[in-house]
Length: 488
Image 1 (cartoon, rainbow, N blue to C red):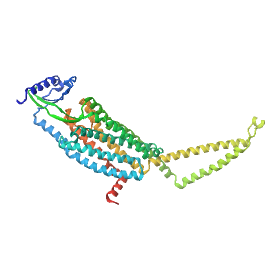
Image 2: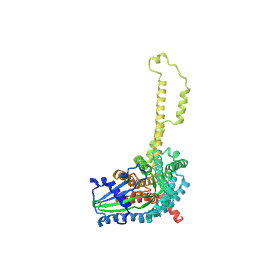
Image 3: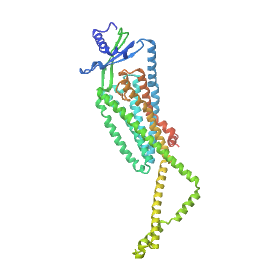
Image 4: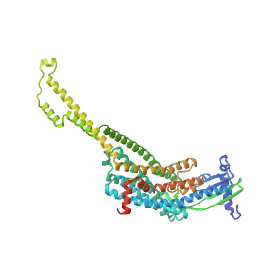
């Protein structure tokens, strides 16, 4: 160590080395170099040994090859954060602004509840990019240029805003998936359920719930400074380096609350929406395939029987059966006829042929009427289901929303997997995806930090890509965008 270190510093370093010696000398930690990362709490009841984390490496701390590999990983992470992030942020802000305007016009024009969900989704995604993604990108240019480091109030507001917008965006994708499931699965009830009024009620309940849920952040999050101790030791403690940086943090100070909130954020943003969207999309696709088969079967029947022949058969069947007027007249006549008591002779032998013929005819008439009503009812329900689920506009809207929900699944799945791997492999608490600056603080490997940079990129893409999906899949959206840009 350098001669300039004070005796207090020397004593502290030796104490940390002695404190971590049992773990550093285990078989699983045997290596040429070790990195000790310590953060001591003022609480005397806390286990000091658990406040230090150890990272090992087989190469020397000063090895050029190792430093080259580390610098390569760091360079990739910085390249993504400095140059790739702003491309998607800028694209997302412009695209979401156009999407919000076009969808809002569609809501006023046709009143579809799905368009109302998509309007608010584009607006919330735009707010996330402006209020969370841009400040986060600026912080990669200058560590303390982030607005959340200005004051305690800014820290709480930025932290809450980032979580609220991401949770609301996920909730809107789930809501629009449920709306589409009702429209496809229950086409006769959908016009009564999927109304603009009901959509307003659902949105109000969703926003209120998430506002209350994320409101705990104002109490849990703090703006504070902490001093950490980082020691690198190589070759059996013969070469030791020590630094003590002061870090400004905007985070949940209490570790227990941080662990609980990490699970809540993981469940609300990724896990619960992932399960709901995957299940409902599977049911929607199954229902669409079933409707397509019914339509193909009806088309085959129409081709098999020509139109004039089909109408001729239907006319003959109608002529053979009595009309509703004839049926009612006949029933009135039979009801008005006096009932005669059978004579003893007829009661012992065969009944009166006239009354027997009358009862048989009444029975046949009743059977034909019930079968005709049942057949017409089934035919009407089947035609209504096919008409609702195979309507061109309905199919296009359903396919568009399937793309939106599946893109959400694809871009949030890495976050789900990464949180599970970090929790199980590194025995660390799950990190909030929107505030993952604590990765380095817990001294995770560099490749884990690179994975987080990629996951954060996927998260920004999730809030930026919907405009591209609308443009590629939505024919009406392209037409409205052309009218908006060209004025035609």
